[in-house]
Length: 405
Image 1: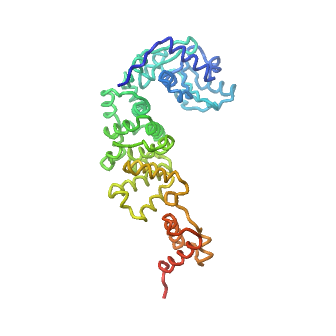
Image 2: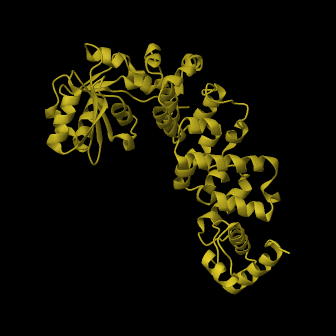
Image 3: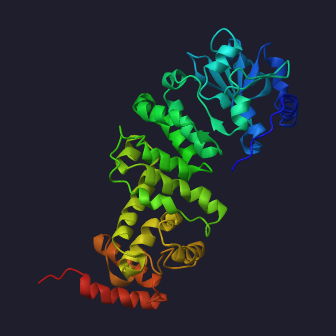
């Protein structure tokens, strides 16, 4: 059971002021107009002591945000990007941090904070008065690890916020209010109005979250993307018992998101959302070999199937190892980490030019099949040197080359 955070306004105000000073972005304060407010994630993560996320800074100014961004970027050699010209939102990229500056929504900062998605993101810090502004009791919800949306219209106005709720659920040790879950389920189809780029960004965050598994189970339970895919073809049983014990931290960070992507979305949805070519091809391979594994045990794979698996999945194999029974995972990971393991990292003793020279072959399918065959034999150490490879190649040619009368 989680113990509530102890909230002390003065301590938090001092902590924010000190953090600004220590993180070396306080130099822009003199460039900001009176009434400028630090908002959102910086405050939330500082209170939660999630210091790795203190490089994205969001500031609200009374007006003219783009002009202010441009002025600051020119004076301090930052890179200026217009994020939203209509809503007057700009970004300044510095080497060590990024600052987003937006013009205030509404006539007062209170109205701006009340327009945000969740109460934990509706906490402001007056940059000149050094005071917390918390009209929606976000600090109280933060202390209780509670995700609360006081105005559901704020989610409807920007449907991406529906997905952001699930992202915060995945990234932090918060609980989603049941009424909020019901609301998300009833309004999930509004996500169709959101650009695929924004959806992908949030999904990648979800897949990398500390509680990604719980978030993914919830996404599948409420069938969040039923407007994009059919859920009956997804194998939810796979993700209820994921074992990370044998994986290194870097392996989990790198390959678990691929595993979750493959479990959350059908291939057609992954393509429609325009994930990267790498993510599309990787998820396709993972799904292919997952299906084979569902039909028979890994120990019943033939030599050829095992070789094909390692040839196709060499660079992303840990994403597949999550599917293996626990008793096989450690051995597979040890072998995959060993770059000299010939099966887990298929290679060849000879190349195409060698074969063309010694066997008088031309480029074409026969040469490709022969190279693959020799690689398989080398993987299982049935050939161990160049001469054996050439001899085996000659034998293969005699048996497999087309015969002409």
